[in-house]
Length: 293
Image 1 (cartoon, one colour):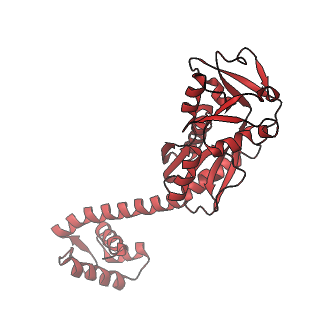
Image 2 (tube, rainbow, N blue to C red; image 1 turned 120 degrees about the vertical axis):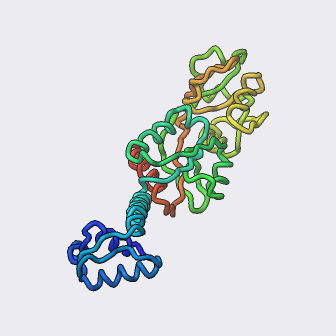
Image 3 (cartoon, one colour; image 1 turned 90 degrees about the vertical axis):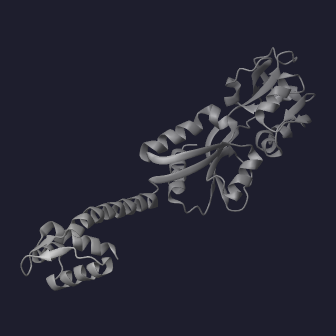
């Protein structure tokens, strides 16, 4: 049984006349008659009783089948629309990985809000990750894109679109000797001890700073929250993007770092050969919005 059988049957059932139904379907009346006989043979039931050579009435089985045929065609049309919309990236699911700083800045929420305006039927799954685990999640297919820190070089098959750039701040415990200053020059950090997170974060945040200061890393934390807790405890000082300076953490102050042109850069990490329409549409939106960066 094919969808055309349903369409042929519905036309005859609504017209109750083979000639008129054939004209409506733009096929020959004998062809339509043959298709209806074929459908009845498949179903093992009579659907019509003839009144004249071309006029018919529905049998009880035909009346019941009419409701089912209409529902079947409606579902088939719906399925076709869904597939076409999915092919245009209008429906689907988008799994997004992100760094904590991206959620604090609003770049993540604004990207989702803008995308939902044009694609209201797309659903989102969010995963807060650390820089290294983001690359693992991309490789495993656990996420489709990610808002993460820029890298000098990305793993094969991945690329980054620059979204935002933030000045650098120092995270310092309230009792630290530098805490009383409004701004702190990179030249004043020569004797300081630092708390850091992942190696990739060190590279992205400290690339140019290291040319002036050789930071002494005394502790490393698994995530930014743990790093700030260690700094607040007086273990060392930390370097963070300006967006995190908004946080209110007891025992901790943030001071702008001067004397260095380095900025923290957040990028949209994506697969270069991405073929999922909804993911491609999101990447294109972010690329279009980032042209001025």
